[in-house]
Image (cartoon, rainbow, N blue to C red; front, side, top):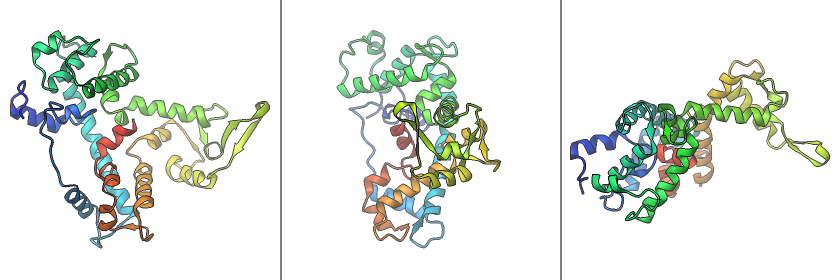
Amino acid sequence: MKNSNFDSDKVEAENQLLNVKGDYLVNLNDGINKKVHVDPTAVLQDVFRKADENRDKKLDSKELSRWIRLKIIEHITVAVGNNHALFSQIDANPKNGVISWKEYHSYFLKKRGFSSKYVHNHDEKRHKGLHRSIKEQIMRDRASWMEAAKSDPDTLTLDEFLAFTHPESSSANHLTLVDELYDKFDRDGDELLTEDEFAVLQTQGEEDEMVIIRQDENERRAEFRKSVDLNGDGKADRRELLHYVAPQSPRHSEHEAEALLALADGDHDNMLSLEEILAHPDLFLKSKMVDTAQSFHDEF
């Protein structure tokens, strides 16, 4: 069913452009949409074929990791590249360099197929006439909006809008993650993480004594050397930590590949066959190997 508020060519173009937070910018007219039906088996077969670089009909951890990282980089590139175009489209009334909640909410309702008259007269407190699922989406969006709006709770800047639609792509969110790493591990407060600080976790014990937890310490030391301390000087500064937390970092795709192998490698050969993947369709269809965007949005 076509959206009565937009011509079909524009809708198709926007569907390709606006793959952002919430299905309402991908599938217009929630509830009355024609859902796009795809064959899960065909999707998984196609992804398997593309990821199988050496054509041996098996995916090892390196092939899995490389494919997942390719999809992550592709997703981040599209998200950042399209953010300005989407921002400019929503920033319309008035066009003043920020998006108000009213502007965004009007756009949201129009994308759901509601008429301009309904949008103009809509009661934002009661949301009369809206399906429960749409009301719940509005509540989720409002919560995400408040988290992204750092300078003004009622408006979003361009960078804040990226944090709202694609939190995994936002440099502001990456900086917050780095600050959290410092808060958790930087015991001497010098904004440099050493291998010991990163590898040896600490919690407060009784009588304010520090209790050392050495769970998986060797693994954390190996991760520090491989993924955190990029220049090998034994400590990690803010630049290195930003690289570490960024979704494009190889460690994210490596961890995802390891998790998929652990869950689906039935014959324990440290590789995945097509049959093993097809035996766990939901696992792979929701993973970054297939649906990178949704997987990220489920996490944030």
